[in-house]
Amino acid sequence: MSGGRALVAHVNIVFLSQVVSYGLAFLWRVILAQALGDMGLGTYSLFYTSVLVAAGAMSLGVGWANVYYMNKGTYGPATLLAASALVWVGVVSLSVLGALAHAWVRGTEAFVGGKAYWLYIPAVPVLVGYLFLSSFLQGQGRFLALMVVAASQGLTAVVAAAVLWALGRLSIGWAVGTWVASFLLADGLALVALAPHRWQWAGALGPVLQAVGDQVRYGIQSQLGNLAQFFNYRLDHYLVAAFAGRGAVGQYTVAVGLSESLWWISSAVVTVLAPRLSGMGREEAADLALAASRNTLLVMGVAALGLALVSPLAIRVLFGPEFTSAVGALVILLPGTLANGAAMVVGSYLFSQGRAILTTYSIVAALTATVALDLVFIPWLEVEGAALASTLAYSVGLASALVWFGAVSGRPGWSLLVVRRSDLRVYVEIWQGMWRRVWARPQAD
Image (cartoon, rainbow, N blue to C red; front, side, top):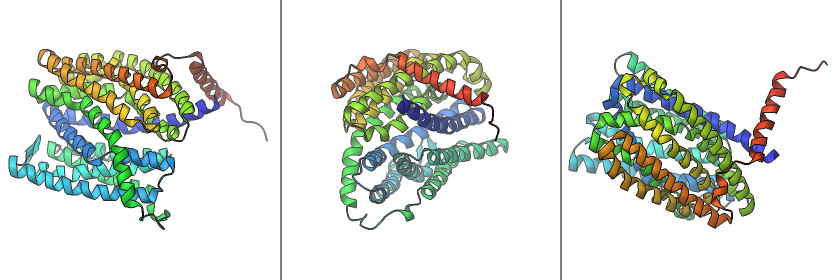
């Protein structure tokens, strides 16, 4: 029980980080929606999605490999940082060559055009750098520092965008430039927090090439799944743009952004679980994963109900009457959001057991369903069709993940979804402890 309370405490810290960083991202979308309308928000979303795809492909899963090898003790942080730097240099080279090649063949237009097009070049490396550096903070369990770095990125972007909006200068180009600059600042703060000059570098560079090979071999297992998952999340944006236009993408972006706010919870759990499970045996890790998945689904379910109730008013007030069509899509998305949140926790267990490829299989199954269902529902129902396809596809992914969990752990997959009395007892004890501290009277000296 004490282990469960400790896990909840760590998850609460990371959850606060998720609330701050994703809350700032939410404010960022609100500002863009108010300043640029659904067309502008749709255009930015397509740029942003394209950068995430490129960064995900080029990073090769090295960030996840860093977390894994640090906690397994295979390599020291200095060796892993040097190896990550080599991969990052390759990312910079590919970004420059890719942008130049596209400009030569098709011109300087890829959702954004003109001077803004060239921001693709720094956008991908600064995002990959952030993924790499934050993986060291996560692997070392430095969740408070991770929160500060993430919050600095979001706060910089929001404040700059708000000032530009107030001055009447917020355009697509300025929005993209602000986003890139905010991640550059976050990279610098992450380096300061890590203070690699204080690490033990003696002998650290000898096994760098071997470490790069191991990073890529292990990381690509996770990253193939991450890329498939990302396409599962965002492929429908491109299809909505093709069948319904960029204004519809703006509407869908609002619905998706609100529904994915529930992943603040599951993401916080996974951030804490991934390094912890990697240091446990198979049975112990399975027990912890079971409890974490059940409780994550319970908390997310309560939050989803509240979000569905407040969304009609919240969308109108925050984004404007232009975005009221997003309400229906949001409600349709919520069951799938819950399913995918539970699948994230299952994936952290498979990752910890060195079986990340199984998570990839589950995500590919979901992606296959996404493509097929998108092509059926989006031309017919447009934004609501994309939401329905996502919910059904996320459910396919969860079902597959439960099968793989059972195969690896020897436990029935359905047990991840059924809340037990002992789970509720943890919340009761936490609440009672908080209540006692609130009402405790100071003792006289």
